[in-house]
Amino acid sequence: MINWQNEQVPTAPYIASIFNYYLSDQLEGYAEYDELTLELAKQSPGFLGYESFKHNGRGSFISYWKDMDAVTNWARNPEHIKAKNLGIKKWYKYYHSSIAEVQLFNQHEL
Image (cartoon, one colour):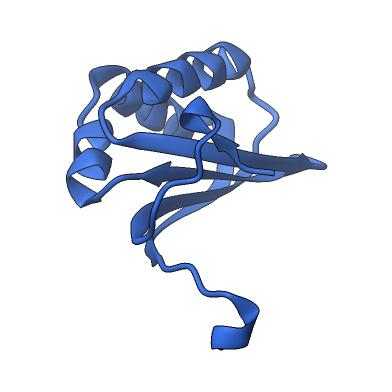
C-alpha cells in the first residue's frame, strides 16, 4: 500500500524512485538511519509518498516525487548522502536504484 503524503493521490505524471536491496549482516545504525532518512524525505519539497517491502533481508523502497527536480534535491541532502555511503560500506550486500515516470491508466484505456 502506498503511504501518500496528506493521504492524497497525486495527479500523474510524477516520478518513482525505486530502491531494491539485499541487506548485509552488518546492520549497526541501519534502523536509525532508515527512520531518519524517511522523516527527512517526508519533509522535502516535492515528496508525494512511499511504499516499502521487506522479506528475508531483501527489500524495495519506492518513493514518489512531484518531478525530477525534487528527486535531485533529495539526492543532494547531506544526511541522505551519508546514509548512502554507509549503505555502500556496510549495510547492503547489493542494491540497485531506478527512476521512472509514472502515468496512470484505467484498465479500459489499455
